[in-house]
Image (cartoon, rainbow, N blue to C red; front, top):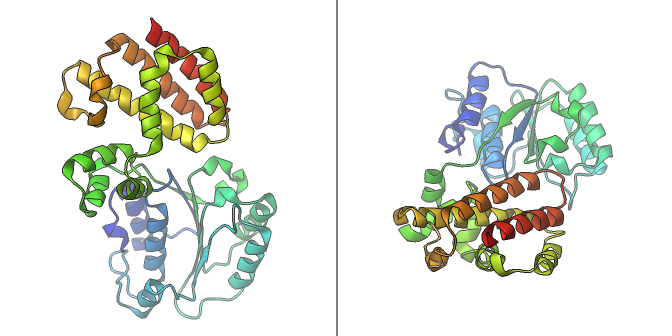
Length: 323
């Protein structure tokens, strides 16, 4: 896929295309943004363009020998480095260093794509830093991460940042439409996908996620739950921060729907299968509960304990729903 064909990340792709057109390609880039929004796809398209023998307005031609080799995953000037298990290890960086010693046989550049660089062990990060400090002039590094703050500041300072956003609803909806889903299901899954291709694909094949049902059940029961019920439930989320983040996302969506129904705007409701549970709380209760959920969601992006966030927010929401 060409850079110009990537949808929903126009700011990032235009930044990259402009650099190619002006022959001002940096030696290292950091592609940062949420997971599942096209960072790796864009990185591959950028590498394809940089290595192309017949660039057209910054884009790859797709027909030259270099483009054909890239398409067949057999390009001698492209190095694709995935974590070995949970982390990128020092041995992987040393192997990369050996590959970097030699100039490209054809073309101007070698391109290195490093996935999930936030997963680097400290020895690997220090070894990579040495390469970035004195990079071979013919090499372009693309570091991909959804958590840039986990990298060494010295690595960050040597990379040109390229920021990625969550994908617009129309891009996700078109992605789901290609899978032959009904319009009602597309509307629901588009919002649940949270602007992410990976979530949309998972929802399209697996159906509605378990955590959405847990969020719906929690909202139904929260006003009648005891403190010990909340503490017991919090323990289940103690080591599952990703699942807890998803739960808070669904709580926010369900509260949004309840507010819409209360205002008589049924056509904008997404979780239409939960409509019968919407008349229990008043507008003030729903707005205050929404505020607590959104505050909890922001805290989940920090290093705070998921269990403590759940306990604190649910106790406050329980108090709101009892009032």
